[in-house]
Image (cartoon, rainbow, N blue to C red; front, side, top):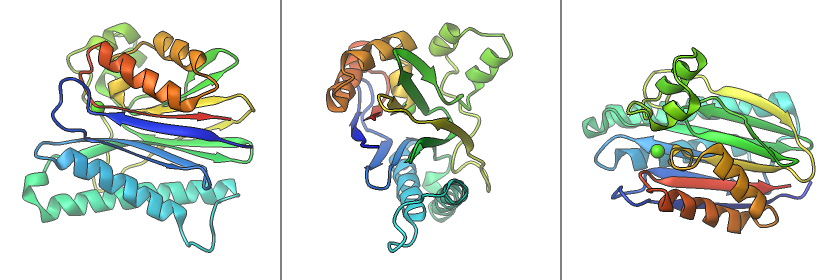
Length: 245
Ligand code: CA
């Protein structure tokens, strides 16, 4: 299946630095968004370390480019997340000023007719299919746990003062387990990966409308999503990757 993809990242209207990182490889069919946290530039370091480690481990041996086998892909993805976590923890150990740094990650692997999504934290993956927007990840965040327990609505969660508290991140514990989700892939599908700077500023309805409006053009979709996040306040860094199949 042919994939057209594009990614964009923006510092937003309030923050001084951009702590998000992203990565795109159409040949490998591998896509990552990471959203770093921690002061003194540590967030930037954490998200960059995570993306580098994920890509390096996921790519594997250069003679063995691409993974065609599902089990192998899942095994590599888990190894890549473990290595990313290990490097961030090591970096914190070696630099005391980086204490408290961490990062979320969401990755998407497109295989023949299958997508494997891995995530840690509150970066999201969405799928637009036949005009319907499906959220493919469930945030590892305090507010999302309240939503699951029926104590908050999705709208409450989006505006909640504790919405930034993630319950799973790379760099916070010696070992971290990514949540894996698998979907079939159909021609015409549009996938979106994003940091929470997007979905904090835009409702799922607005995300859906924007993706539909630019469904033929991932580049235009990315710019429109970032612009919309900024016009709604741009309170955080916004990173998006849009893939059209
Ligand atoms: Ca963020």
